[in-house]
Amino acid sequence: MNLSRWTSMALIAAGVSAALGILLGGDIGRVLDVIALLLLGTLPALRLVILAVSWTRVRDFKFATAAISLLLLMMLGTALVVLLT
Amino acid sequence: MSGALHDGIIVALALVTSSLGSLGGLGGAILLVPLLTFGDMTITQAAPLGLVSVIAGSVAAGRAQSQDGAVNHRFAVVTELGATSGAVIGVVLSGAVSEELLTWFLAGLAILAALGGAIRKGVRWKPDASLGADSVGEHHGSLSGVYRLHDQHVPYTPSRMPLGVGLMTIAGLVTGLAGVGGGFLKTPLSSEVMKLPAKVAAATSTFTIGLTASIALLLMAIDGRVVVSDAALVVLGSLVGGTIGSLLQRRLSPPVVRRTTSVVLVVIAVVMVLRA
Picture 1 (tube, rainbow over the protein chains, first blue to last red):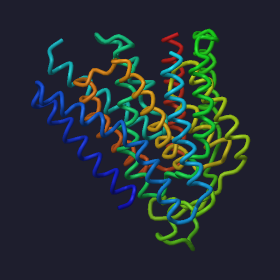
Picture 2 (cartoon, rainbow over the protein chains, first blue to last red):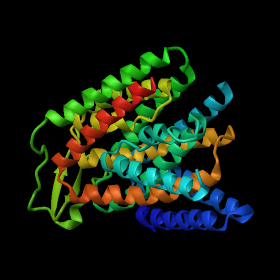
Picture 3 (cartoon, each protein chain N blue to C red):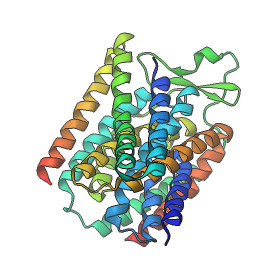
Picture 4 (cartoon, one colour):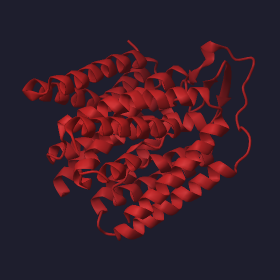
């Protein structure tokens, strides 16, 4: 499955979850709101992982390494900020 | 304010700011956050909603933009390595430089970027009639590519990458210090310094700001600052807004996208100065 297809599926799931969360309200609504946020919040990093995997598959190692380095840098930055602030 | 009116306003604001943000690759948060604070929200409550809007707008726009070959993911990853390194250093050093001085500096950069985009005439990259639909996309092992412009196909190759990545690192540092997203600097740097087509620069920036915003949102969630019920409203508005922005970008010509981006950059500069 390609990046566009993954993105579309996650988008629809997040949109439906957010809409149902708003309509239903209460505890169930809150859970659905959190699911929508989790889906969206993890999607950008997931897209980067998918890119790194697909570039590795087509033997474009230079850019696959760059994508993995960026992921590691983002994780390192997050850890640093959490520790220092 | 009644609950339904409050909800409707949040959805509408997210929709409009995400449309503008996705069109120019600037991210809508820098417009959405001050607008939300005109109501009954504090900046602390509004900031995570701004990030949610950037992520939702980025992902929604990314779908159509990827289909047109307008997002150059390889270029995004390379330049984002610089911008993220700068942002991490900036966040760690935040507080070392006067916030007001930084805001004025960023507003000045936004105006300069707006002028750069508005003054330039014509189109840098021309369609190539010999290229077919199968040529659309990024090239294996390089930063060049072909994007779809209406029913034509436009090849491009970015240049001055060392200078551009260096400037991206400085942009990341300054935005990290100031605690703002860097989309309004990334698009002009990609377009005017590294010579990416305006549409590709905007779409690629839209992709990278989603990455940065997701990390910032994670940090705010750890801090317990995300109000999920309001965030769900922003998700809805921004998903629609991001899609509208990407469809507008598909229909408009590159010079119109560039000038619209310049106008939004001026608005962003004014908003920043007002907030300072």
